[in-house]
Image (cartoon, rainbow, N blue to C red; front, side, top):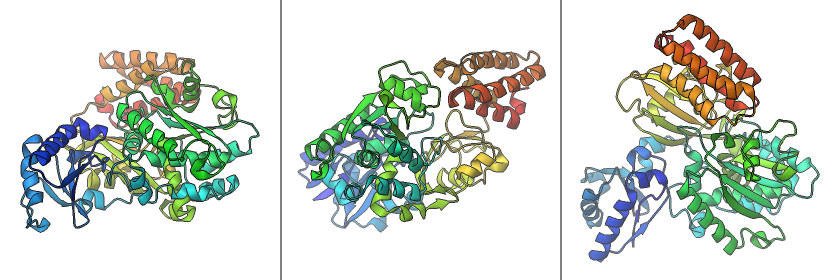
Length: 513
């Protein structure tokens, strides 16, 4: 039986993959063809969606941007007994999927299963080394697991880049009868979608990572705090969790061992601030999402006052690879103190938008030009923002900076969650600076004055600049206001909002005068 793969993740569905799948199913039934349709996860090449693949001689071949009018001709093409990939007889035919340059140049650890099959099939996941790390962890002591994570060099992929093993060690060393594992899946940064893609294309990887985290710190309860705008991920996770309970992977006896781990999904209420870990914990407890003062750290006094591991999706997803392959294998990727691989999300005015996974050390220019192909419009790149809506715009002279936490810190920028947004030369950078302040004014939890009042005053100052009122004086006032927010805000929301504003003024002052 031949197999046809049609993605079922949010991005592919938005591009019409469900309609394409239904049309294929209708024609296959009418023609009595021996073809099985598999709704797989996305490969992350969103610029090619809907990407339809079929399997022949254990190789996968792709068709790009398939629409309804092309379904019948594609079926005829793949059903031709004289099929020869080298002849390339169909206008949408891409050849072997893994030979596509965008895909071939990647080194995938966390996303190597993404797009290969049905993301909800446990047998498929297990056949690709799934739960191997968990089985190894079940034979280890908690300290041994924590030591493996520390040795791997894994740092939090949510933005702060704090060493994961150190956080786990703190929770393990804190004496308490109840501990929690919380996954921060409130992926609210503009231009980011790696968490969603992993949850929709490989949910068991996240579940496995959370169980291992529970074993490492003696926690038996986990929560996935998911942003409410991800209904596909919500449905996928709930189905995956229920199947894990049915198979004895979750619950009272994990894989037949006298180990308990319970897991459930909790939906957020649409607040960006709940991506901050203490605000998330407040929301998870049923309270308003307000930032907590630190100390105490969540690792010591977190959810319901108990020691809590809070990591994001990509961090917990990497754990299964580290335990499966070993920490030495994982840390062989990357550079300096930035070990492993980084999932990068390309969006904005970009020709080839999507997700790539590469080791730390590749330059920002290589990512935007070699993978992204430059701007979608074909105009020159004017600005690149790295690290989400609170990330700084990177100076053109710094585009050859390697993607490395310390290297980016040295140029007063950050990698954050790995989101890269590209702008061409038609963009007005004043508008982007104003957007950052407005975003903060809307999304601030309101607990601290510098963020709550500072962002509102920042908008007022920017509007005066826009109306050409005392421009130079107001630019000085804006800088002083940004300094106050940066150094006095309670959390990164107010503390980082000045980054895009100050960098926009510094690099593109012509748009402000």
